[in-house]
Image: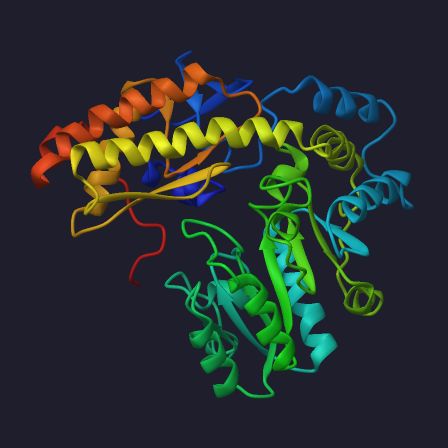
Length: 406
């Protein structure tokens, strides 16, 4: 009854080795989840990144429960909207005003609309993944249903390559409304790159937008703005902000954010209080930095351990790991990259851990959780030595590309 069987493509059966991986998860606690058959797994996707404190965190669940007793969505504004906005403004350098949405895609689309209103321009330059809405996904291979006229307004540039960005800004002189990028992902920013993006955008009359849906409140209490000491015009937040509750935010300088007084960005559930209560509890838990420091230490063990196993087994031509300790990203190369990814995933599942490429460390993961994952990586990489074909070792169909040729 559900097309593709899922609401989120990255959670669908196409992204896991069937017959090996669970299909439906029923509950979670801390950094562990249980499927509908009662099997327990260490969770590293952590719901694709939102669950930064852990499943069923008492601080967040308590805040939700207390608010639930008083109502969920109201006919007028709620004080929690102000209280959460105040926290984001105080934690994120250069943010002077905030608007809330329900998803990262909401936030990015709102930022694009505000940038177009502010600049009077239409074109957008992007680096990274920015959600499912037309303005961005039209630039990918998943563009079916997006009008060609919309697709023509968004163009990609090469991350960590200021010359490429400058070339594209020059080629579209006077046309670019916004330069949007994920400040850190599989690749981390070269020295001066993020500031260079902000400066180039300003020089060409465009706004700079950091997509901090993943990095926000994870790399530092103030996100990438704080960690890299760079202030874009706007940042978009999501995922970790709600520890699993559906909430996102756009924040930036007042001169830009005032566009939202006229730009239409409005939804019935924008001020829904359970998610705001969760966000308030999350921000209060993260604001002194101690939780994120522990996540970084544990994540460093994971990142360095995967690096060491790749080097020890000489599989660097087929597997690489990058990103920040808070979220290491394991990537695969070569004609059989999906086979290799499937094999690694199968080995992690056999070791009792869920794996989809991103190793989101939460406050609830333990040294033992990391050690078990690293032992499974060791098993997987052993079989990949000397370019061996592991297709015959798979016990189910391999995973599929999310973005593939149409």
